[in-house]
Length: 131
Image 1: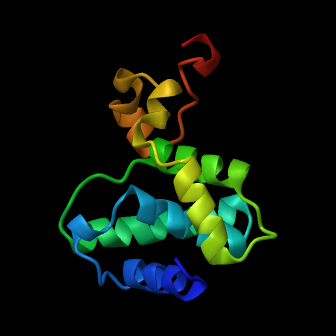
Image 2: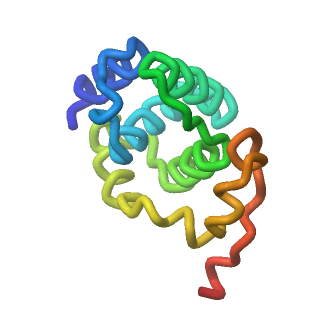
């Protein structure tokens, strides 16, 4: 992805120009990188919440999940190299965090399926070093 491709993706998400089937894990990661390039974690997370909730509502879906959203934003922040151009940083993050199931190294399915985890941040209940 070029820098322009990333910024177009962000605009397409924010303006609900994508179908619900056109926004995948790798796209979430790209938007996360762009948001984190523009601000700190909390501001980027606020922007992601607004964008995802708008997108979900636009498509008449349910599904915003606070714990999963924060988890992935934190993972992106941990691995982000802001010395790279935006597009290169997105490529590296997408390669490093391509496994959507990574979250299950930190959370049980029961915890992630709980109403609490969907509504607010819940700390991980799995120790990834023990698996």
